[in-house]
Amino acid sequence: MQQYTFQKFTQEEILEGLRINDSKILAWLYQDQFPKLEKFVLANNGERQQAKDIFQEAFIVLWKNVKSGKFKPENGTAIQGYLYQVARHKWLDILRSSRYKNTVTLDTFQESQTDEHEDRESRIIEMETAFSALGDNCKKLLTRFYYKKESLSVIAAAFDWTEATARNNKYRCMQRLKEKIKGKLKIED
Image 1 (cartoon, rainbow, N blue to C red):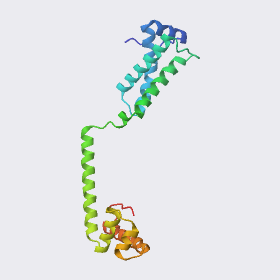
Image 2 (image 1 turned 90 degrees about the vertical axis):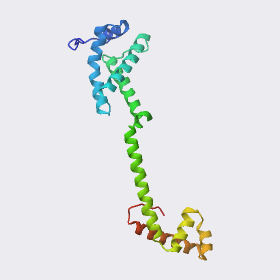
Image 3 (image 1 turned 180 degrees about the horizontal axis):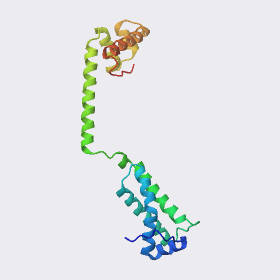
Image 4 (image 1 turned 135 degrees about the vertical axis):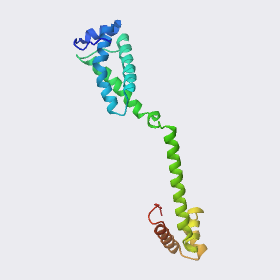
């Protein structure tokens, strides 16, 4: 590809070159504008090939809008600014897209799933061990409250306590459980 970096073109020359598909103007526009977009894409988690793809898409938008008469430059650098802004917005759209955010290799996904599963299993074993070390009343109270979802008034009646006593005992049992786990697992009251 020839280098056209020495010659600058006016907005009218560029517009006319786009309208008639002048290869000299098209090549010059690419060489003049692509490095700016490439730098932006690379600085924002992209790769060179992605920058090329985005630039081509933006170039087509500019080309179509010039051919159809929708684009009319307002100053001496309007074409270059318009091309850069279209490309920049296209790249930002890709970065915001759920497809880009959720792109994960299968190996990475499987490793993270395995790690999560092992962590979960380890936490469950720690909790079960700590729970089994509690006294019978604490085990019954916590099982009724957290597992069976019984209210404190129902639990209080079952143990022949006041509701305030049930609340205090639940708090104390949770504190004992937390101490037994030794801060390895955060448990909500």
